[in-house]
Length: 301
Image 1 (cartoon, rainbow, N blue to C red):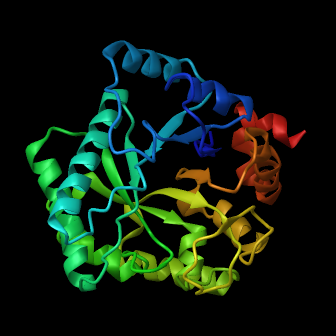
Image 2 (cartoon, helix red, strand yellow; image 1 turned 45 degrees about the horizontal axis):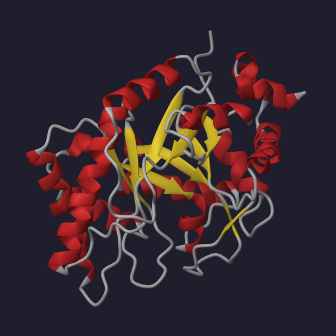
């Protein structure tokens, strides 16, 4: 029996209650979803009640969605060497990890942050130090995933080597992984549009970081050119990356069971559906077979 599974979805709303995210995800046939556990534009949020946490976990148990991940607030900047910003960001990250823990969410995706006028190596070390302090002083099971960035402005972690530098300073290795964003990586200068460049990139990733650290992939095309260092997501097949790269990615045996979340510029939730259909059209017969018993199957008809 083929145990491969396609965990595919989009970022969905928690409007009306955290558990409502599952209904929204089910409406577009997701097998995985990504959420914010609070407003991504505010530092603080009302605590999650035990009743709401149980409702969320019970809804997941009864849902056709098999995996849920969370994304941290964009306000968080644990790379900052400004002490006030660093402490405020660390406290906010701790709170978000605890919220995920309460909900039983395994992964929290995090933008590492920006360095301002600081040296790159100092900011990378600050990212690790803040993460180490959180896990050293709190019993948190949720794993933080450092997302590769486009290199826009003074953002850190746009190169595999920079992510590896952070990871080298992490004391709690089992609590940190990587989220690969296709748009960000392309904008940062990684070309994976042909079979040769695709294989070369992943060989570098494996050599520098290790494939096992990859836990989530954000699947997005790019409005801007290779190496532009500008973070502008586009619908799959409509940008500068193109369909070949995504065909290689979705049929790569190493990543079949890795959670894949689309972060394309939708206007309504239903805008995801044509994108899911495109993904399914790129799958080989072998990789299409396992989805026959999942909600995605209806999109192949």
